[in-house]
Length: 141
Image (cartoon, rainbow, N blue to C red):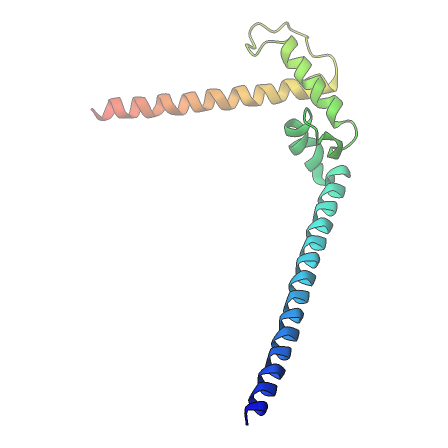
């Protein structure tokens, strides 16, 4: 009777060991599969950024990443464009009344100038909204 229970326990231990090894193999396989999927997604994103799909690389990421170590991801030409914009903004002041007339000579300079004017316009609209709110509060009193 005692030998039957010992052999039964030994068989159960062997079964638990093989089940545990199978579980460990499943965990390792899942881990490496997950890493592979993540690497594939990262490669796909890099390709989409490099190909400049919908301007995401040059319009969205270039202003953020052009002076970092990961700027190799950006599309060709976007780094020079961002450096040009930075130099242009240093050369000409933000105060638009002090800019010389006819200071825009190329299409790229015009694009940068329009972007600056849009930002200035948004700033003025925000100031206008706050002044309207203050006026409304004063009228209520």
